[in-house]
Amino acid sequence: MYMSPKGSKKAPCACSGNDHEAKGETACGCMKDKPATGVDDKILQVVKAPGIYRDRRPVRGEVVTVIDVTFSSSGIDLVESWSCAVSRGEIHEIMVWNPLGEGDDAAAVAFIEITQGGNIVNGDEVKVDGEAIGNLVGFDYNHMPNHMNVVVETRSLALPLKLGSVFEFTPNPMIPFLDEKDCC
Image (cartoon, rainbow, N blue to C red; front, side, top):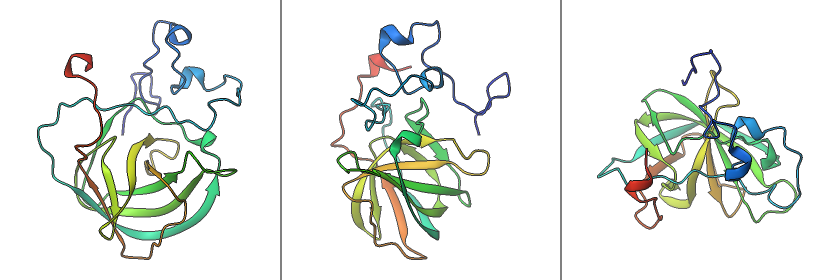
């Protein structure tokens, strides 16, 4: 779990230096109280991953709880991180987001137990029981330190999940990454 020097559980803000409005960034905590505009409210501010990973193994997790609740994605607060290391045995919540959906455009669908740990990266292809369902778009720490929310962009909020279903996160070579010169 990330802990700032002041003890906050929020990830560091990319808008330091009070220039966030000039840069147009809205995903960090310093813009959370900005009034809704109605224009981009259904667009999550996804952090693109740089192409720095030469190779990674897939990460797998088994469904231990099936959840059935939908809500507006405006409650999702993606952290300023493009990747996250997950360890075997950890429990995390899977949320899905359909940016083309009307009304409730997000859902909490499952808790998974990580059965093969590793590093998951924004843009990873996400499969359930071998079938592609979408791509990883980020991480939400609203429920930390209990668990992390792993957010996946999908075309549908309804997934055919059952106890024991297996989520798999695999590197997706088709996703455009930032140039290495833009990294870090």
